Image (cartoon, rainbow, N blue to C red):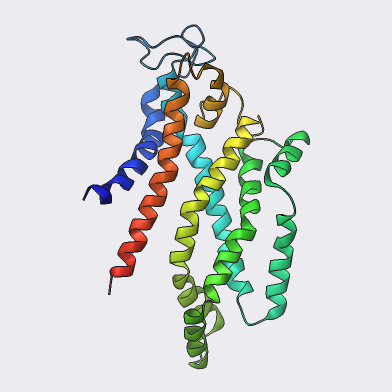
Length: 261
């Protein structure tokens, strides 16, 4: 029972803080000296800008989790249909999709973000779709490989012989067959997307330097790791709980799906 609830507990903590934190946090403003030691008024001390660290952390979960979810959702919304098209019977469609996505693989992710920032393209409106596009080659390959698996191909051929239309076979049966592989990939890819978004914020390419975003807070207060560790370790632990909890919950759900007759 403990193993079953551990993943959900890990995942629930950052999600609840991200959703409820901004409501109870109050205004994020300077209240004292930078990196002030914890006391009764400020249990986690203050950050580099003299803001209450607890208030900053409560308010900073929604930006990072929201951007991560948006980038992941957009990537799978585009990548899975592309994978289904590439796995179709038309070789021209397969070659066109896969060779086009190979071009994206030629560009290092962080280099792309830095070039966009140097060109003046910053902020979530640019960062989210760019990170989503950078994930498309891998996601499309996962979807294509799952759709071309022997068991899936045999069922597709049988449905085709029965006269089922192409779109119903691909987006009906095959899409359901992809649920397991895609969910597994999403659990691990969450960490990749979170790393890219955090790296962009570390480099000043995403959110502004005074944002309460957990990734920004970690970067801005890294110098105070030994003098005021809570303002760095608490958001870092929340990001770790988000990644680990997501993977544990995904594994648990997939395991339960396999044992259902």
